Image 1: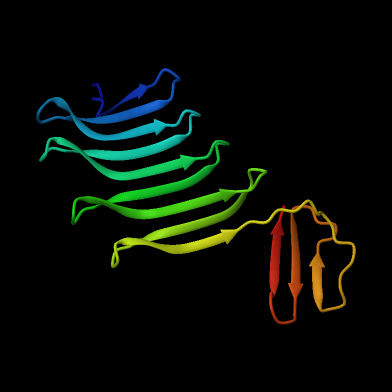
Image 2: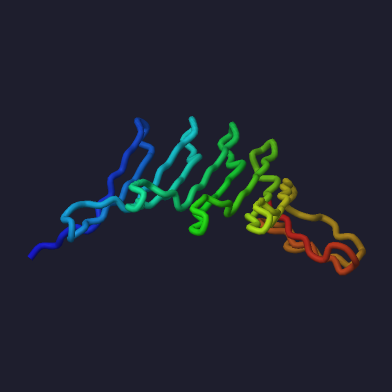
Length: 178
């Protein structure tokens, strides 16, 4: 007895050996032939960063590929990921709709300083803010003096995380990561 291979993948690469395309085919026993199933397409910028990742399935009814998921990315001149847009297929409309979007800003040392994330709001058909984060970096690794107000700072010296707890009004806890 022998086992019939039920699935095959065909991959295409560019001259730099970057993966461009993967097509999956499934064995159809009733027609005794390979039938298209799914594909993943990739595109890259001049520095080799993935700027497009699109997943599709083969639709026999229209005899064409239908995109299920699409992710687009933008990088700055330093190779930092600065923006991303993710979409998925809305089966009701047959259109790609927004899923997730983000923007990243970096400081002069290529450390992320701002992160803004959005999600798609189906009621207004637009992106809405989901999360916004600011990142701060410091060369300080220890605190030599703690002020007389009720504040606790630990550990001292700091290695990876510095915790500052304040009982008074205002900030209750602040975590700084270096």
